[in-house]
Length: 395
Image: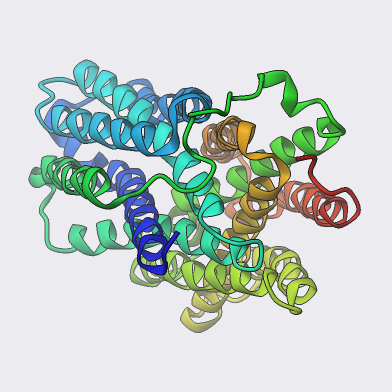
């Protein structure tokens, strides 16, 4: 693969991840307008938020498997097209029921894209730059979320449908770019190569690695999505001003993107151990600082930025290990399963926070309750990093 094709493929992967990040953030930003338009019950809003995550989980499992059978490029293109059409349908929803169904369908399309864009980034990169490429692709998610937040600053509540119009039009352009410019990378073509059975995820010494990857991705996603959904409200519950809480959320996304990219680059250099240690130490320190620290703007913003950098770096490390963990014949299937398990965490995280608050826990207690999950995620990362050095992946 030429350098131009390599850069073109990575650009498409980053853009696809930005579409997902935009969509995830847009749902929360549109919630106020949706309440104003349809006056849904609390349970109906909960289903609206859960529908896309359920679709993302199912789409990731199916999309990763299909990619190993027919190739990454066609599955990625179809997934992006399906996401685009369903997002536009969401903009035309006439009640909360049709809105929820459209979000489920949107999630199915977008879910098929995520494991393939990560697998593509791994496929087109040499081993010396694989983690940096995966990190670059993954940082598209927080960048897309940041763009959605910036757009929200200029939109009134009544214009909530615009989020889904923008989220539907942009992927149409991306699908056209995929069709024209994205070339099949080495190992993607199904000609002469048959996709391995799903049982290969647990064979050839991969059983423990697969299970720990699933556990780690679930734990990291639980922390990430709890913070994405609840951090502004939790900070305000501690007495932090709304403007400061909003700025902290933006810093979480933008500084987090930079941290994720640096972690990916560091993993491909002699600073690998430092990148891993930094990501592991940053998260518990930031959680404690947000929970127990002062409510002044600078400490809050610094802790939120540190948490974003640490947790997104951990996600990149996990996906980097997953990209190396499986041979090409089952890489899409393996990535789909890892992304699917992360969706379980993304569903559980916001629900856990809501349940704790409903039970009378304070914002500080909700944040400190994350620490056992933080320790579990760190243990998975340490084991996976050690295992990737001591047990090479079978060809």
